[in-house]
Image 1 (cartoon, rainbow, N blue to C red):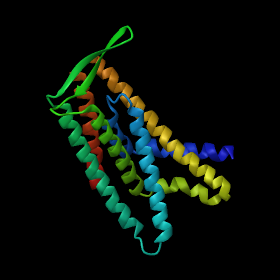
Image 2: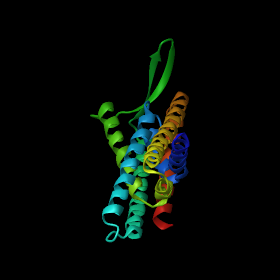
Image 3: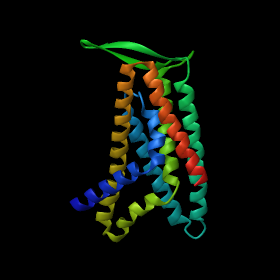
Length: 220
């Protein structure tokens, strides 16, 4: 049972971190997010729901569903969404509403970058970003079939061990993307310490990366 858990954790983490489309989607939402790890966890949750839904569709409509065609369209949609996310990030990075605030935590003052257009509310923006992360994870769960190969070992296991493996797979997915998002958020916070221009550059690079990966997904 312990081996099944470890195998599931490793497979889930490897799948999450080995997809450039996964990383490109999470990075622009995570940079300079004080709770960036939540973005990764919510993406992982959406991905798990997408994979489960795909599995359910295959079981229910295995003779009617053209998996290859469905996957092809899903992959193209991922490319379009990544390009849109990248454009959003570039607009944010170049916006005149991006500026720096100094906050004092205990005895140390730190600069944090904020985006404040007229009528902007930080809590509502964070709420929208959370929904976006879940939606992106859900879309990635539907797109492609590579994640299904990570689930194949469960077919060769007894029922109780298969359930343990699948729980480990989902947990590995969540933990890996949560950790990656936290790392991106930490890097964004360090950029904030260096000033607005450094933050703009970091977000711009992340957004350009999302556009590049999205373009590859459309043409490859």
